[in-house]
Length: 450
Image (cartoon, rainbow, N blue to C red; front, side, top):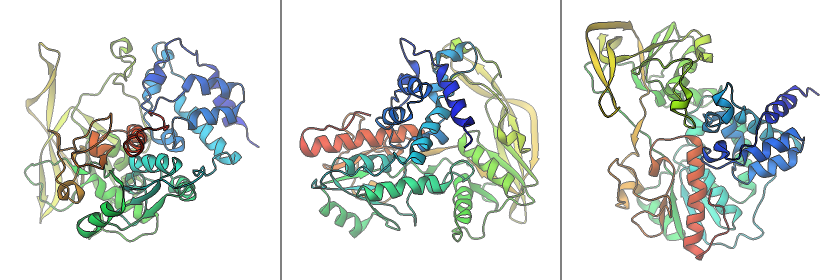
């Protein structure tokens, strides 16, 4: 047996200083007990490390692969060099537990609790359903897509998350009593039936209304939202038919990805794997320094540049450019016009972008992917039919103390309430919402706060 991964994890865990104030713990949205399970890994007490990890996070095999690890940015060792590789240790613990058979179904002794419906099967909905089922509720999860998982299923490429990892966890949840319903649009008579048969309804439908670029030439064929490509590719990898007509494919094309976040990076990797002629990412911010002044930001993440696997795959990035317009021929996009930006700081320390006159650039592009984030939940289904109150940004109005919406018995969590955010924040919200539902139904709850 190759023990090198275990040895690497133990070595990294040994670097943890068990700080008097564990900033890593405070900056983890689910408050993972990081110093504790680091010490246990170093001492080869893997079972105890797993029990500590599972007590705060029901999906460590997901966060260990996908989380941007704010805990590592807050690690004290970050101030003098490299932080403890907390995320890698977390994944090692999680996979060790699966291999050892410790990650078994944990059904409630009785599922005598009232029925609860969860609408949406992304990370927030799954985290909420998992906690409620373990507390003894009869939980039904409704998903409009043909498979469970939300963006975990169709929004994240397999080179970042092998779907067998997700399916493994879903199998455990089924064994714990969670019932999943796919291809279910929760609207009209379906919504009314769910409300009649459920004591509480949790909305975890995500925030999937893409931000738009209203620019000249936007109507040319070949310009798509990033998620259109990612969903199609995930379906193709799973052997499912495309929902796009005609299909989107980057083979032999010059691709421009507008947006510098994780979704944009997923598009880079996907297009490179599809055999694109060139792949270029446009980022309107200036390139951050490779060695930032950490003390200006710590324990929060400091903007920093480093080479990524997509750089190694031949993808290019242009920093400090704004998209002005799209060029086309015969109704199809052929190029992107960019404007150089200059960032200036005002007297209050706020940065503003200014276009540099005369500095234009044209990039060839037969495929353009817009990856500039998501503005709000789509105005459809329960959002509109229940007449829920919204906050000024268009998200469902509910606080993070009780997660209650303006309708009695209806709760909201995850991106639908918080706005576009991280996987680990969605898990936190789902767990906290489960506790809020339990508290509302029984006037007490033994579920954890996070």
